[in-house]
Image (cartoon, rainbow, N blue to C red; front, side, top):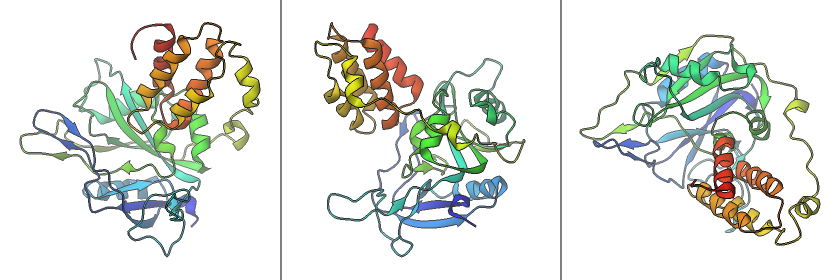
Length: 315
């Protein structure tokens, strides 16, 4: 069995699950820094389904797409894909996987679909995915905010017919309303049920269900999931206009924005672009959206934010 058929489980001594208060507010998971890594083999989607049912009751674990960089160095380590500034070597290695987790969030829920009907909610979400997913089987997992916030908020797990990298996934889902951050190699994917504090009630009778279908999703060939070659950076900058056309500083600011503040930084950068008169706004907008996608923002959210800043309104 290859790394493509494995999943890396991270265990921390902190809560890796969101928590629900009695007033319906949601607390984020603890920002754990140190983890123990475990590698679990997976044969197919059925095996993944069994694992997810087990992990749902363990509040101190989550999973990532990456594999341990050093099997002998998996205890009390950080989630590092690159050399850290303090000299610590990478602990995780990006590898293509056959299993896939897809987060569909902020999706409007039709009036005829009950929020408690995970199957129906997931069927609506699947229609927003690329065509290859329409007949596939899925394990459906409700996120912590499903049933507490408006819309459909589910995680769809499926099995691919070949291993796929994070870069391929971001290009494949470039026009779908999904959270691209889950395609990052060391991005924690929460698997535990949310914690309901005293006085809070879970609005859902079940949090995991299954959509029957084809056991594997047919993945397009690698050449179809490869982003087109981009022109040199200097050539792109010239198209922005003579006056104040170099927005490289704004691009760097968006690219390095902290998690949780990326949308605000993107809006600020787009507002600075809007203040420049002699600039190609369309080209600048495309560049801002590109770097926002690389930073982890969903395509639809990035487009709305940039358009709002450039052409008026609020994010």
